[in-house]
Image 1 (cartoon, rainbow over the protein chains, first blue to last red):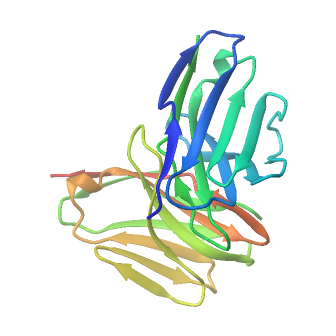
Image 2 (cartoon, chains in turn green, blue):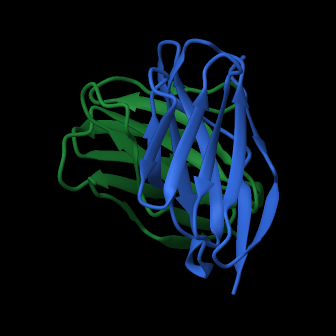
Length: 115
Length: 112
């Protein structure tokens, strides 16, 4: 299967700071990327869907000004958590799919802890 | 209508036994049904997927059974091994959306 990487794998930050998480498709062109968050022992919650070169589509209840998503190339999407607060602490996972693909390839996730 | 209901929430199986996890959906426009395996602290990995034009798909020890009329699908893990201990998620996609709708997950523990 195709490989998706995320960086960093974990990050600890102070409340009020911003954190950027990168998601890269290493061996295929990802026309669509998805960002999820997952709380302990819970399922994945879709935050937003982004297509290369266009604005992301956010799920209901997700603050687009707080969770900034950029999908500037076919291999890179970034999620920036702005003015992070302890309640933003979670496991953030991206996935990517190519043109016409049903299959989504998931990254290894990023553990964010906001103190 | 976008929900996918998964059961059981947790499952304990003896080594060598069969693990069965069930999912049900409402939206008949769903046309792709994958199963994912997730280990703690890792991202989900695709195990096996099925489309509604077939009733069963087998890959190694993993089998998906699909019942279109009942709007249900299930994952069977044959000869379950301790290394299979993980959380399993069913999902569905379709109805004009590229995003997956996930079930709530099943924590499987295979006892040696």
